Length: 461
Length: 159
Ligand SMILES: [Zn+2]
Image (cartoon, each protein chain N blue to C red):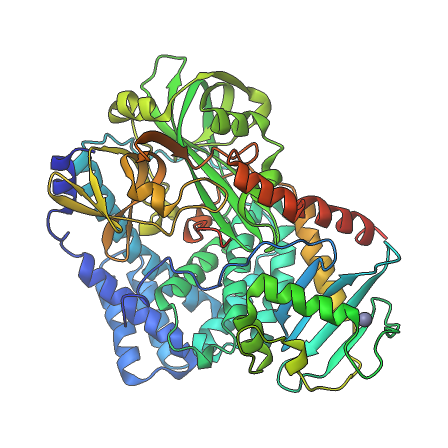
């Protein structure tokens, strides 16, 4: 990303975004207090939400839902309509922001093509929906231990169905946050946008036919990793490798992602999480050793997600992610975003930034300032705020969060004690390479092995 | 609404610190208690369920088959001591003390500040929560992308 591109990215507000977010705030505030006890102002803001969508296909359903809810009738159908309305608004914000990014960077993006239909995932969706309904009626402020515990059964049932892992980890993550915040009535402030995001997303995923991943085809070629983004809550971890794919069929170079997610428990943290992913040794080796990977007929979705199959992947030659970013990133075709995933948090665009200065969490390039997200430096890798502060080259993800653009570092080149050093988020995929960290890990013992032993002994009695 | 309330990504659950799990594989602040599972020092197949109630500070310890712990004679047994030690490692002293509603100064021993009496609490519930916890490690991993985890970025480790 050049200074002039950053300037274009930051240049002024996108029209309509503030208004859309204000309508979202109205819904989120209603959910804080509970839909069963809306005051006049909250009811008015819900009506405004319905009004804004009146001329869209959702309009009649949302209008009717707001009327019914305001009158005290809070059914599943009404809630689904409201969740859909909120999701539509945030989808529009996503589109506006991503279009701004693409225009500023000159990034070419594929158009969305609906993949062939597949049978809807059958599964225990109703229990989760009922829990979400209870939450909406009660409001975040009314959540207590009993209401949180009511999610356990729904989560366990969803976890048993692999195709429903998305809604399962989402409900589980939300329940854990509510549990840690109980009783919510005593909290100073409630993360209203966040919890409403999770609530609405879960409610949509629990409608029949919305969950499940559909591959649009298969690809062969050379994958050049750029870096790894790590997601984690108490009971789940996911690595998402961003890379450039050179297809063997001669079609254009494209940006893709490869993901692996594992269930875990909250006491498995830091570098130990890699142990949970060791069923995918080729991917881990590519990350740890900065190698390319040769793929043979690996399924891919229309949204640019490879459905990773380690046995269809072969480790290739060494491939420096900085070189990949420098030489291949600007020409690579970016994937379309699946309609159901359109939300500002989904924006995570790989970029290379060079020749900047950093002060605190502010990066300056040719006089333009971009915030660096120093919180998103995963504990399973070597990236630290100190290294980022000493860096002058970075491969990262541009995100849009809290009303501003930010850069999430995936790899940096830095000068430490007059020496050039490099750190990549996936450097410890095969174990920590920093002797101090390795020693601490060894001393703490193997958490994964201890718990697997306990599980083996106690679960199968 | 403040900017924080308008953010999609904020940390709500404070991060846990890594600890050795062999002795006390499971600790949680839940259901109004500090509760957990302590491995028996002598029998590899036996575990103790130990708990301390928030507020009243009554405490309980017994095997997962509801046999009372022999070490409970008017004072917390070694299992409860291990539970408290590991809870403080995992959550930090502040969070444990706040949950149990007890005042503990820096460097003070939390257990010595509790003045509850022994009171039998059923072990079955905690033990089944522990089994549910372990069951996560039995789930297959998945290579289908989970877009929902975009709301849950991994953050810096606490060392
Ligand atoms: Zn005991």
